[in-house]
Structures are given as C-alpha cells and as structure tokens.
Length: 171
Image (tube, helix red, strand yellow):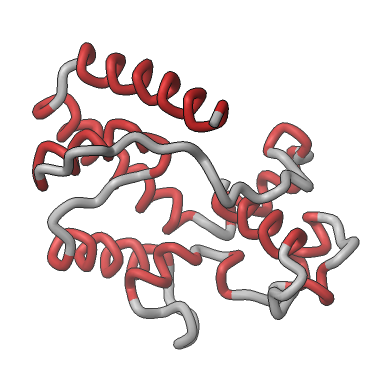
C-alpha cells in the first residue's frame, strides 16, 4: 500500500522531482525504473538510516528499524489503526479535540485491486523488511489498543467523528 501510495502521489504532484520521469508510466514501469529508494523497503530504510546510504539485507533493515522505533519513540502507530491511535494519543497526552476530516488525499491512479499478480509479487518481494516492520508495529498497536481501549470507546469515537466530519462539510 505504501508503494502504491507513493506512485499515486508522484503521479499527481506536478512539482515532485520524479513527476516528469514517471508521468504516463505504468506501475510496472515505475517499479522497474527504480528511480527512488522509496520503492524498495522505503519505510525500514528511513527508520534504520539506510534510505540514501547503500544496500543492506532485509534482516538488518528490519532489526535496526524496529530497534530505532522501540528505543526512540514512546508510541508507534499505524495508519490502518488511525482512529484507535488517536484515542491512545488522547489518553496518554490529554488531548481534548481529536476529531478530524480527511484532507490531502492523493488521486488514485492505481489501486491494489488493479494490480496484476506479477506486479503485486514485484512489490512484495522488494519490500520484505517493510512488510515485517509494518506487521510488527501493527501487532504492537493492537496489543496497546486491547490493553488501553474498549471496543465501545472506539466505536463511539468513530460514530462521533463521522457526525463531526459531516457537520464541518455542511458548513
């Protein structure tokens, strides 16, 4: 999902340095160009310090990135658990208003459903450290959510946030 998001972002952002180079290119062509370190384990590379400093193996990328997240951050959240993450932040920091509406959403040039099996396999094979890091972070989030939040709290927040977003749109 992160690689697709990056592809869609670059396709839609005319002032991005790679925009001209990939405009009109398919996701397969984009993946084969390897014009950005973001395409292969970009998240693990960022957190391990290897984004622009050469290659390393997936195991090292994962271990260094997970260690960095564990040692340097008091809370690691994932966007797939966005609402739950906001509730955790509210509980831990005393935030008062955490309601939101989505902005800055990239146009979808390609969705996951449109990928061929081969294209998906290309992304998966070159992002093993990222997949492992995401699963590790998501599992940690799920444990915190289970420990610190009730299902009722989460459902109430989601329902109230939808009402709030509709209200804001109506203004």
